[in-house]
Each structure stands twice: as structure tokens, then as C-alpha cells.
Amino acid sequence: MKVYVGNLSFNTTQETLEGLFSNYGEVTEVAVITDRETGRPRGFAFVTMEDNGARQAIEALNGTDLEGRNITVNEAKPRENRSGGGGGGGRGGYAGSRRGSW
Image (cartoon, rainbow, N blue to C red; front, side, top):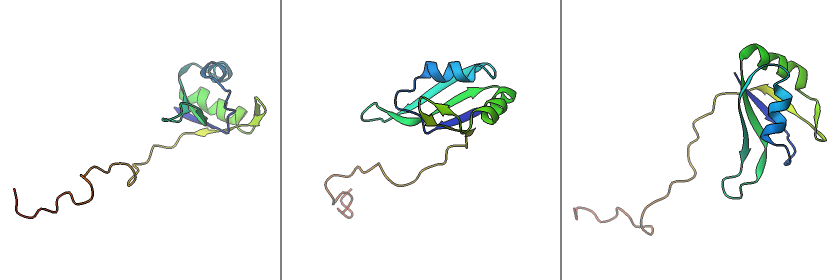
């Protein structure tokens, strides 16, 4: 099960989270999410572990203090397909406007 961990200090590391969550079961992956452009942490992470341990961790850790912040811990929701944004392309604003010149 994948667990969402939010409201993290920007100083929280993968090792810190792995140590914390391993008290409840075997941790298979920890991903501290960072900003693509700056590389700085975004204040949340995902921890993957077996279901039973994940449920125990959610129950025990949600709302507790970690490095001076009250963290949010719950089951991660599936990622939604995001539309819009990004992309672009084209060549200056008139791309494709040459009718029939193929």
C-alpha cells in the first residue's frame, strides 16, 4: 500500500521516514517529492509498505509531530490524469495556418 505523508519539514529525509515507518512494518520504498526545477523538497512524500503495517502507521502517525510539524498520514489516492498546462509546440503562433500547402 502507498501512504501519503504531508506537511513535512523541508529537512525531512528518506532515511528519517524509513526509520519512522519501519516501526510498523517493512518499508519497500520512500519517495520524498522534490520540485523539478529547484530540486528542493515540496513538503510531502510517499511511503510504500505492506497493507497491515501501512494501516497501523496511518492510525498511529496521522497528526503526530515530526521535526516540529504535525504531519498528515493517509492512504495515497491514485494519481489523476492532469489535462492542460505544459505542451506548447508550434512555431511562433501561426503553425498550421498554411492551408493546402502540403
